[in-house]
Every structure is written in structure tokens, then in C-alpha cells.
Length: 158
Image 1 (cartoon, rainbow, N blue to C red):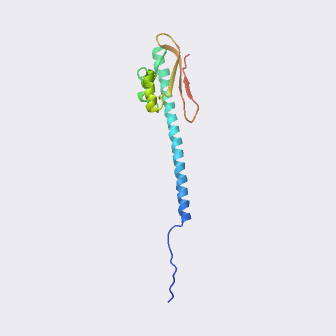
Image 2 (cartoon, rainbow, N blue to C red; image 1 turned 135 degrees about the vertical axis):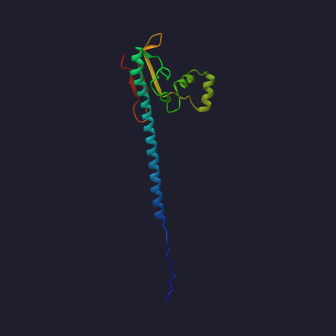
Image 3 (cartoon, rainbow, N blue to C red; image 1 turned 180 degrees about the vertical axis):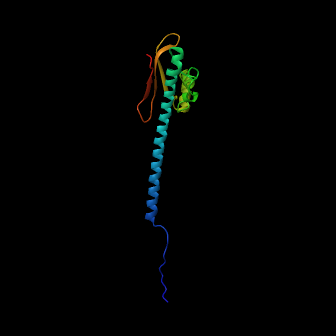
């Protein structure tokens, strides 16, 4: 009887393990980059939906009922739209934005020290040709988008 000293080991080689690790790492990086792109596109889409809701509420509900545009917009005067659409992606509402502009210099300094910057409201409503009663003849709605140019809607009746 002949006895052999060779043993047969089973398992993966270092090269096979390294290839698997590299493939998994590349797939993970690709997944997270695509997820970030999809999240940004979804955020941009939500911003457009909000601006369109404001626009159509102003054009189809507010202006026909009143014959003018308001000097500012909020859930109080644009009642035909979901009030949640006034909240931007940072969680700021028009009322919050007004509070930030009315802060004293000391309050602003304290906020800057804590938060690192004053948050700003993403949606911009700029009324045009307003009289002393707050009745306006036109407006511009706008929002900055991450993946596209600024999204702008202007009044139909100028």
C-alpha cells in the first residue's frame, strides 16, 4: 500500500475572494450614487408639483373669484390646494420664512451660531403691480431645482 502525503484542500483562493469583494464594492457604490440621483429627481419633482399647485390655484380659483392676485400666498388665501405643499423640502413654511426675516440681529447671530446659517424658503412668490390694498395684477412663482434650471411660472393676466 502506498501512502500519499498530499492533501486536497477545498475553499476559495485569495484572488477569487478579492474579485467578489471588488464586484460587491462596485455594485454598492453604483447603488448609492443612483439612489442619490433618484432622491434628487424626486425632490425636484415635488418642488414642481408644489409650484404648479400654487399656479393653478392662483389662476383657476383665486383670480376668477377676486379679479386680482394676492400680495402674498399662504394656505389662508389659496384654500383649494393641499396646505402641505407650502412646506418646502427643508420643512419651512411661508410663516416660518417670515419669522426668519423678522428676527433681531441678536436672534440671527444666535441662530447662525447654532445652525450654521439661516434657512431660506425654497419657493418664491413675487407679486407685480400691486396697489395699496394688496391687490396685484401679476406675479412670478419660482423655485431652484437641483438637476434642472430654475422652474418659473408667471401669471396669465398681466
